[in-house]
Length: 444
Image (cartoon, rainbow, N blue to C red):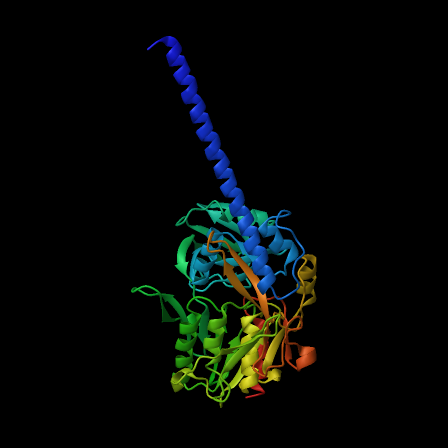
């Protein structure tokens, strides 16, 4: 073959390769563009058909789906990629990783621990909500915290299994832990003589565990305290295990602590409402969409008397500005069933110091009342991409069919609930609970 023919063939082959490459690039770009357009069209149709409030006036060519959710929809509606939603669903089943805390930084006071997840590394270390942390230590090297960034900068680089200490602001306590995978627990139970929580079972999952450190000697005889943190994971099975314990101990009064319980799954709320049902109403809550269509959510039917809270039991509820959504719906069901009186709902009345910090942090302060979230969200999945839009789709009403606490909450002013002084959302010694118990004693 001549040199000229070789050159000609080389040019032709190169041209074909370039053409194929160009065509592949063009098709890839076109397919990607088509998928993007299809995603926007799916999202806007989903919003138009299902979103409870007015339709957002946006074009799919103007902004991203995440921005549509952030800028045009209410604060409870969100957009997730397939991967983001998978992580959320995994977490909501109770499968978590890390150390299991929520926190904030308060100037001149330290890192405030606002939540500690049950059965997490932080919980097992003895750390509890209401603790103030001044520093952390790894291998004897101490790092002081003077901002949220300091704290995050200390925690984030640590590897799973790498031990470290968190040191209390007063220097009296040190909590040793390490990041790990864990199964979250959402409840705990106390009487004056014993306490119960949930820990890892050898067979997998969680099992009840006697924990005498949880006993509360200040509780009246026959009174039990049950804390419920969220409506996720194994909350239903945990709750009914503890109600069985309550009945086995022949307790006659129950303090249900829903402080800072922001809600969760409706089906778990329905399950728990069944423990308080009056035998006449089987409705846990009602939803109404923008077209007026109504759905009744039934409470779980409990045939086993050992898992029911008897009508003779006096029920008291602790709540605060972080008590929201499913928690408020459960309160509504209990009130409508006659299991709970408004006056026996104890609402946190924050100190001026706490309120000042909340205001300075930009938080919408709701003092001596629950949060006031009486709307529900529904996830919609794009079957083509796996992305998800969680949209506000309906307003929630209590079983009486008329009461909605959306944007107002349950309050001291309007509902004659009982205010209780609260220095902060949580304190180490839980002085708020002790104050509530003193009032409860007078009502038993």
